[in-house]
Image (cartoon, rainbow, N blue to C red; front, side):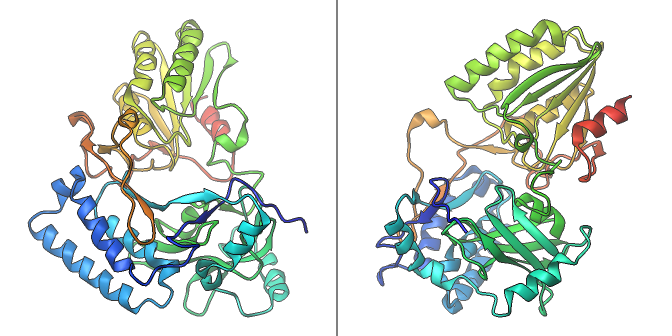
Length: 414
């Protein structure tokens, strides 16, 4: 099988060649993270009084777990992400500082690293596992899955601990080999939790409302050629406008990013479609996978829609990756009477990052070199609803994962 060494994949950079100095520790990185979090408006707003006491009690619990962890190089990030999740601010993040793997030598070094060597291994026969999981109905959680880029074929099976394990059966990248465990998912109270190992084997703490939802969110699917919930993977176009018939038009916007380039592209798009949009009776806007950007990126579109307000039926398609400025846009359309279709949005509404033009670097933990993404301000008052943070905005009509979403919307508005 041909092995791909792709510049799309990265390896974790520790202080010295993927190994940790004895002078640094995961607990030290946690202390550093806590000091940085104190600068975030979400921390200042939420971590006070009784909540502050329970927060730091949880921190002490995590520190105890860190001391007992035998694979800390693999799982340090998991513990730090658990702490971040105690604050309702979906813009907060932690991610390794990375570099691209370009040469055979770099791959060889990575495969000798502690994180690669510590990655869990499935000890039983892989051929038997593949045969067993290939026989499950497509409706079952267990079965054969693929990453949406088709580089990994994975068996998902329930183990004796009632955990779903994702075990690599085939790999087209040298960063993963058959038998390695890509993720572990288990139930906890009213949700499910996962430890997922990314392409460079760093453990990530994930959560979702159910196993199927979480697998889709992490982009593990049974049929990578048919994933209705995602939009970008179905087309090469980042933005798209088309008339579906004489009275219905469809507009897809892939990003509200506030860069000069993107704002110019959106301004050109809005200008080009303005007269056409105002002529149709029904307008379907699609912001699936639009992770947000700046609020001003949608002001001109709102002005166009306002010129026709009350004369036009508005419909909006959203998904779990519709976030931040796209969620603000969702609330704006909802206030204008639009019907919202799809699934809950991401839930990253209340806070925002600094203006990227400030060029102020993000803080990096001293030991494991995790970059900390901090918010710096609250969003406008009219968008402040802490219930939507992490939970997202509910659609008016939930769509099925078994059929193309635009097809479903068109049928519902006939």
